[in-house]
Image (cartoon, rainbow, N blue to C red):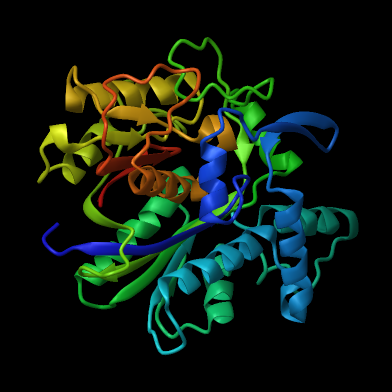
Length: 381
């Protein structure tokens, strides 16, 4: 990329917390934030936000009568976006675009209204406007009183990184100087979890073995949360990191949720993101690694194809916070930035770290969704 694009702030709202110092402290621990919770008639492993963050969501609902009927995915998005914009120093005079996506959208609210419809044959007045996929960006724009374009999309688990790609495109085109990008997800419902069980990819216990290439069963576990980043064109005094390369690709479908054996989509998008970079310069990769046998192994094989025998340090955060669907890519960007800021690699505790490096100055982040919609983003200090 010829012109630098700065990430001037990043904020999240997840099982890790909502403050960067607390989030880093959690990453330094070798314990998972996954626990067993009851959904419907089942007790299943999930990663939920803390009771303290749940109180913040409740306070937000009570703060404005218009917010009381919103889905958690919207409320998480608002809280993360407020903090991101505040940390970037943006104010009412700044014109910025918004692109926030979600894989599932207003999952809990949609299921609630649909259940009411099956029981009564009627829906409440706000059933439609509060459950559309554009709901998150629209309400964030309303809450921040922004004046720029607001965009929504859903590209399954790579949604947040596609939001970043779109923000980069607007900035590179000269159509905006600043963009708020990210994803938000609140998928912890009995119906959503049942869908994952039907696909035979959900874990039986609260042990997500993401990036364990020796596992013999799928161990994906769901988490919830939102993560937002503020993008600005050019070099800035407050840049946390710069977007050095972007890549995107889609696998030819063999099955509706499939990814090819050596993740051709990842090979293509990593090559695109790395086209102006010496491979030796990439210190680490935050993998998508959802905890499924095929998903983890195919991505690893793709990385081997690109980097050969000397791989960057490899990690993922899904063993700790579960898979947060549409917001997962931006939570991975947050981990990448934290590792560069602290110059410390956060590995997976049950996986040996190979080719360990003393400094971390360039990190690649991968994400892929059902159907093989992959994105790679190369970040540097």
